[in-house]
Length: 461
Image (cartoon, rainbow, N blue to C red):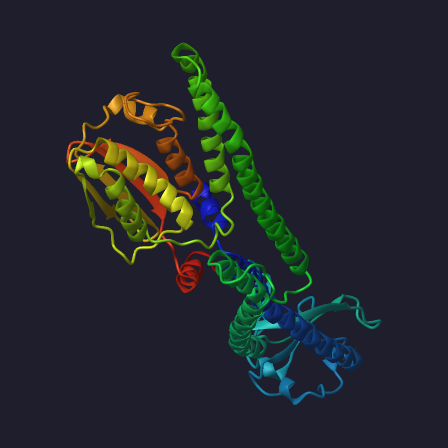
């Protein structure tokens, strides 16, 4: 159970965390106030009542004396008329041995005690707030026990009324503070929502950096992000330029070497052609990796698989016209993937080239959609296919399953690695037509307004 609660708390958004903390703190404060304030007011009222009773005690002590027979007597009545009104709720009682005096307000009753509750009861059995004092009179041998009490009910009624009004006020205060805190949290997290929208636009290619104004706590982060973006673009440009320069620099020497090798006898040609092929394979492989890593706008790219298949198919129809292969393109023309157009052409070109080489008569290209974020492009042919044990082997670099056809053994590996760089993957299966079924899964291109909507559902600030 604690693990489940911890997991839930871990996945709470910033807004919910702040509101939950504020709710817990505010609830604790409101509950404490609702309990402590009435208790403190009650204690204050009891103390004030006892102070008034002490005044009555002093007045009673001043009027108490012994008469001619040596009995206790009151010189005059106390000033408060409630002592003279029966069952008024204000009483006094004097005990000295077997002798007892009491206020007229007690009438025919006495102040009773409750041993278990350590409380006194008045004439109507009402709980009393009381004080007790022992007096010693010079004319009287025994100690005199004086008790003065007042009905506690009016104070408790006042406290109950106060408590009801207090809970109403605290409830309104609680609601008001929650609303204010919600507005404060929403306003405080507004810069993060603005940053999120800018990042979506940046990914969609609508802007190249973060240029909005942000609070001073976030501004250094924005500055560092912009510097990182600039540095990233510079590195990508530099990598592509270096890859292109390397390609051009090596192209001429390799051509010269090939021409020189072609002039040699057959035995020497066989010795030198393999190293030259290996050099060319390494150049092709690393140039492809450089193109893959050097996509300038990899966060904002989009391209149409249907259009790419049509363009590549037109070229291959001419190149492999003698084989009589028919390409059927069933891709949706409105489907867009988040892949650079050149990289998409590179991936689809390698897959279609393999199909054109091995297909008997038909190549079918269609799509499968598993969710709203990805799309799977399926290319299958009616060729001989690849046995299941060799399918994963075919995706490795430099592996050629058939040496009778021209190629470098890099095509499928390049496609697999390029798909991985775009958070996709390539899978080889057996086609319904009998040949190879290549499933290329790529991220679907999402317009910025859809990204904003999806981000607002998953990330709440």
